[in-house]
Every structure is written in C-alpha cells, then in structure tokens.
Image 1 (cartoon, one colour):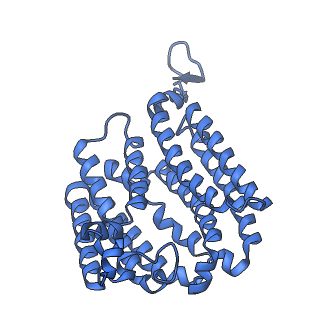
Image 2 (tube, helix red, strand yellow):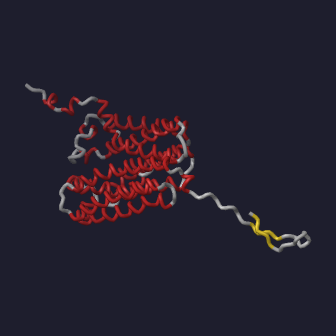
Image 3 (tube, rainbow, N blue to C red):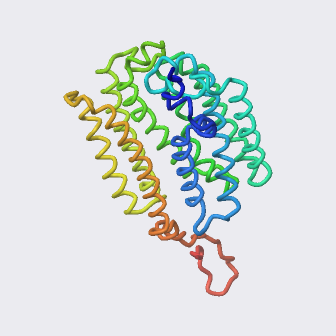
Length: 330
C-alpha cells in the first residue's frame, strides 16, 4: 500500500524550511532593505560596520519574531485561505509551543542585541513596532475594521526610521519622511492583493475593504492613495533631502504605479490586482535603491545653501571719532 505521506511534498519538507517560512523571509528582506538605506542616508559616508551588521540582524530578528506570532494567531483562518493554507502552524507541522518559543528566542535576542550593541532608542522603537504588528494589528485591527491596513501599516513603515536611529541615536525629520512614504504606500499595495483574494477574506470573516465596501470602492481608494503616495514621495526632493536623480526616479516609478491604479479603476484587466501588487513591491525596492544612489551622487551639503552671514545693527557711541549713528556689521 502506498504511503500517502510519500506523495505529499509538505510531509517531507525539511524542518528548517518550516521555521524559515514562519519568519516571512520575503517580507523581512524588504524591511531590512529599507532599514539599510535608512542607515546610509543618516550619514555622509560609510555606516560603522558593527552597526550595519548587528543593527540589521537585531531589527530582522524582531521582525521575524512578530511574523511568527502572526502565524500562530491566524492559524485557523490560514488553513481556510488558498494563499496561506500550507503554512507550517496551520498544517500542524509545527505546534503553537514550538512556534512561540522560536518567536521568543528571536524577539529577546534581537531586542538584546539592539539594546546592548546599538542603542536603547532603536531597541525600544523596534519593540514598539513589533508589538504594533504582532498584537495591535494581528490580534485586533485585522478583525475589527476595514481600515486595518491603513492604521496597522505604521508598524510596517518603521524600518527606515530604525535604521536611521541605529546610526544617529536620534529621530530626525528626514527619517520620518521615509516612514511616511511607506505608510502611504501600504494601502494601495495591500488592497490590490485583497481584491485578488477577496473571496478568501470573505470566507474567514476578515473585514478587508473589498469585502466590506466592494471592489469598485476599493479600486477607487487604491487610486486616491496612490496619488497621495506620489505626492508624498516628492517631499524629500522639496525639502532638499534628495536631488534630481531621486526626483526623476520617484516620478517615473510613481507614474508606473498610477498607471496600474488607473487600470484597476477601469477594471477591464482581470489580472490587474495581482499585477499591481507585484509592481508595488518592485516600486518600493527600486525607490529605496534610488534614494541610496542619490544620497551619494548628490551629497546633502551640495543641496543646502550655506548659511548667510548674520547682519547685526549696533549703536556707536557718540564720543567715537567719526561718529555714525548706526553701523552694519557682518
């Protein structure tokens, strides 16, 4: 008699691959990319090697720890959804205890590395971001409101700020601009996927926007948020954070995103939701790579005009030789 397990690729899947899948490596990799760029944007030259390595390992471990919590909390709905039904916890290849221990080890390890070898500010901000995703978004917002991804997206937007603070130990306005870009990018990115997986979300009772308000409403909001995102991506140039290379890249990439958003609204291409989702990932990666390139092609000190000499009015004493009532001193 044939052993059914022998015919099931998941049954012979190496255990380490299940643990890796728990970490959502593709998502974490994109977060690490934005954190690395945040680090380099914070300094005119090279990021200290220890901060570059330890900082990103710590941030990555904390992000992976949160991803594991997501697997555990969502296991009952994951098994019912096409996209997630083969996840390790949903399938029982790893149980809750194994996953939670794995999450705790990574979370504590990552937080400890940041606290000891980087700085407490980055450690605490990373912890807040992890709690925001693992607990506030996954356990509450995801099931509570169709605006779940808008509100919860702030946690996923934090990595460039974490990278910046890892190097400078301060929260800077430019770092917050990077957060704002990802925050504005998240809704059109995720709603495109939600349209594609609308039936799955409806089946498990998750109030994603296409489920609660319909496809037409969601497509329109993807277009509106894409316009907002496009405007937000111009702010770093307007504030002289970046130069012409970034402006060109942001405009070209933004027009591409707007193209797909319009195609979604027209609704004549059945593949448009997934194509928009795929483009949105490429968009964010390319935008941050262009930020990195622009930072070194157009250094910040060449874009900000030198301070003008201060002008001071002084009253000259009447008894001074060649008395002049007012004098201008630079």
